[in-house]
Image (cartoon, rainbow, N blue to C red; front, side, top):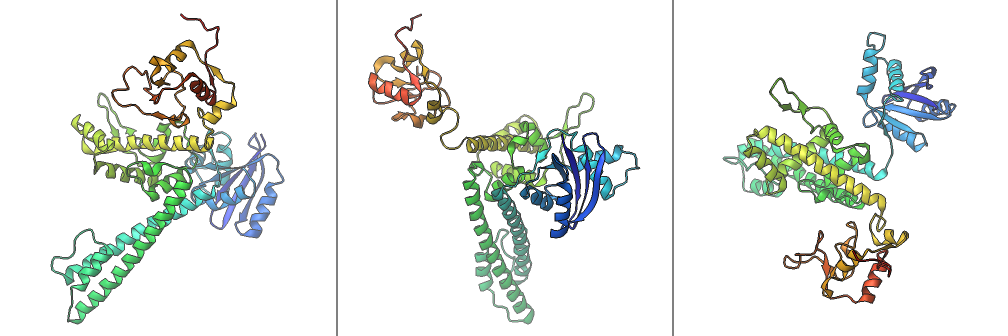
Length: 441
């Protein structure tokens, strides 16, 4: 092990401390974040070989410095602020919080904490994060803009406008009003300006949604196929989660996004309460996903109704529904990562992957299953479960009447295949017919 460089980052300054594996302080200093002083800090750190940077809050205030270090070829790990705070609590010094103390706490806790996330800069994820932030800003701006015309239209039109008002509907409603007094004319002019702002915000929102859709699709993600997740929600998940493999299980992922409930049991009473910790932006995406699913006849709605029928209160059923959606999103992102990592045709079980290895010889039982009744080719017993049906030309999913007696997969194809055709298809899949020495049982 080399040295650990702990950093307490700020906007215009950064305090670092270098320690070795025995926690001996080798160097310390405070540097600016401009080009010249950043170069000085990097030069001072490169005097030590085998260095690892531990930066606090790489998803927050320390992001700009962490990304600059990664671009310069440094190894950077993200240290959550809670870990360094625990070191300060148990250290001698009456819990003082200064920049040198923070840097020392970060450098101490980093080598002793397993599972720290290494910072990796992926440009498409960075772009998604920025556009998702902009999309959230436009959403809040639209809410503010759309609330202001309601106040003015209530004074212009008896009864006001309906609750959900689009820019076109607002302009059509304003066109029907012709006030004659000065106050009424002013209200109408302001309402027209707000309608124009609302229309401009809508155009920017639609353009961002289109761009986010292209980015998410180019990433190879299937998150938007889940009911209740749109382009901004999928981009937010991809940008904030990063590498889904950093979560050991779906329970860790639920704890990180705040959907895992906290145990609040006492005595014979077993209950859980809401967790207000975790990533609140991801928690919001999952909450919106849950609300959308409850409005339609989906699996989420069926799960919620079953919980309510079992006597669970509505608020607790909604929390359980959010916890279930966290598992669904985790499984989807994990599958997307495995598919992207394997590449087209390179995943386990495809034709290309089977041809790389030595062909497997079929057993006699598998051969009998392949030539069953001489009418249809039943491949359920011969093919590995992971071989997709597209690798066999002519395969189709059988109907209910053809599924009986077809084994675990019920796969069959038409028309009947000759011995030579069967041998050719098996060779393309890396399989061989049984040899002459095969013995019947």
